[in-house]
Image 1 (tube, helix red, strand yellow):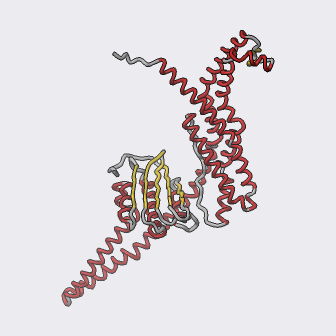
Image 2: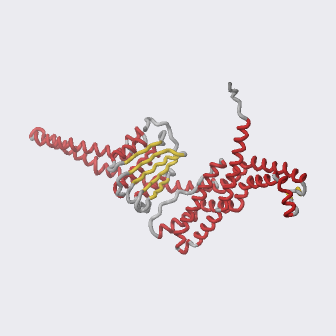
Length: 436
């Protein structure tokens, strides 16, 4: 009958395996840290020649490589050291094509605090940081050298003369045996401290990469102030559109209906046939006015969005789209109504752009909630070449999402495909009706 007790040997082996793994990971990270200096040199060189023109094109490439390299450090710190490191880059603005866009991209990159934090981290990691994670491996190697002294001291003594192990002069078997417990102690120290050194390295990375919370808050307030102004302008433009649509559409039809009904009153007794014709025309006008009012309400806040949520609302968009659109939803709840509305109209405009400009045969929409953010990806198999430039619809989407601290990223190489990814920070509440 099983006693249910733990296997001491198994627990000891598991602990030893974790310690050896930590030492090995430290060795890998130490060699990785040495490569950081190359990234720093290339990035600084391309930034320095930015004013010569060619640097405007090369510096963004070099700094993208730096960001990719630092993303690897963040991932290793999370997976190997248990240290989460935020990536506080400012949301990158859209740039118009041509030399003006190149200059603005260059200036944005070189003035972003996160760029300089990443360069500083790579420089520190290439000079001092790599030593931290190399210490456990060094202790293990030095300890192993002490443990095997009884077997190697004599050849070393005859070949090289003086043989010192730390503070012990190993010139006899007894001295070599005295080095064994010292070496074993170093091995134990290296194993026991391996994970501690990894965490220390991760904390150092977080200290340099995460940035100053006060400065980040200042940047965020400045961006929200800018996007609030955009939101006010957008809201005013939307109110003017609604007023114009009501004036030119439903209001005009209602006025015409009133005039027709007045004419019917006069014709009812002396010309019933004409009165019936006017009533039929008025009935048609009322139906058109009702359709226009429904479309207007749908453009303000679609009923399906209020009743069923973002998932089913996007599915409804896909059903009405002239192209086949596959929709995948993994959003276990409801975002706040303003966020939901902003996401819905952003997807609607992206799908409209696909139909009008992409020359695509199919589109895909993926909605999911990841790490406290609503992430929506709209992909099409069109010809590509979409630009988030000044005056474009994509630029307008980006500015509206910025009101909610959201971002829009577009990857659209010539020849396609085009992938537009929008993210909005939000928490989810329980759905009224499941979107599955």
